[in-house]
Image (cartoon, rainbow, N blue to C red; front, side, top):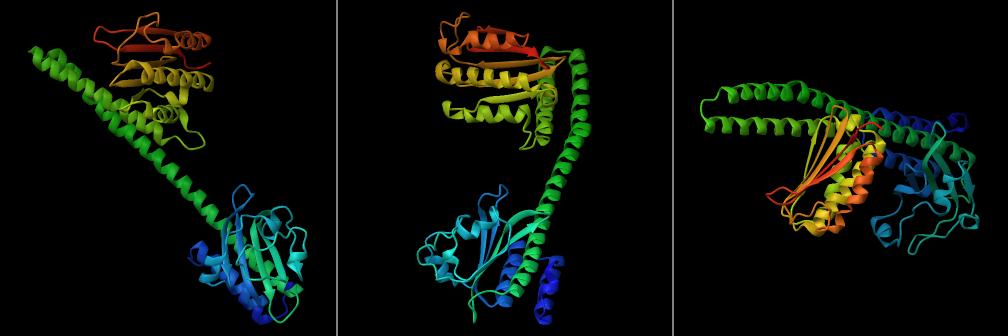
Length: 378
């Protein structure tokens, strides 16, 4: 840290006080705003700004300013995004002092209604060699240019700004990790407690069905068994969805996103159900063909079936991935002649390329059922 170049004890004390604020419970925008204010005060600059680059390091994500009134800021025609001198440190991390900033080859001029600026001091805000942004001071009062001591002061404050930004990003990552751990714990609790409890209830109900004296009672119990089974499948789907992330969305999330993207084709929502550990056992090559098959089948229902109900069911058990897509539409001939948009050849080829099979059924009650099954690991 460039304290050795700061001769004024008062200024040095203020820099150290700014660094001590890192230990305080202050929100990042307020802390960084204080850093800009201190930099402007200690160097005698008329204006100060801190531009924070986005995670890609290609543009300014946030800009904090000091010295401009609200009316002046409102009159400025556009906010900088990293072009010109404010984005200089994106490509060159060295500090820069200028007597006339408009004479620098990277200067792009000021936007309309921006107050005039002449002398400039700019230092990078970085931590461990990674540039996070630029701390810029302009228009030094009482002198033609900023001094080497000014540069040392601003470099020290830039370190404080960089540490504050880094701490905030680290805390965000810790919070994300805590959320993931909490979701994992919730998923385990759901599986260990709720699912197992429902499973025990289902077994009890099944025994009661066998012992029921009247057919009416047996039918009611059978419906309860079916409802419990559906609840177990839904909870298991929720468990696996809890484990999905944006970086690794999983098969469930990908299918749900795909089907929801096709909703505009329907006057109703297509039902989607999962059974088994589809996220953990289905390989990527199978998932790719599976998504393409679902897209083609569901799109065909939307275009040709005239259905009022449709469902997609995916299960993964005993080494096999089974897809069932059904609707209550106008149906079709098994050869596909009634709904040529189905693309049976493509769907069958996808299954056979993965050593699987495809079948089409047309129930007497109407509609169409597509069955597509392949080994889930390829």
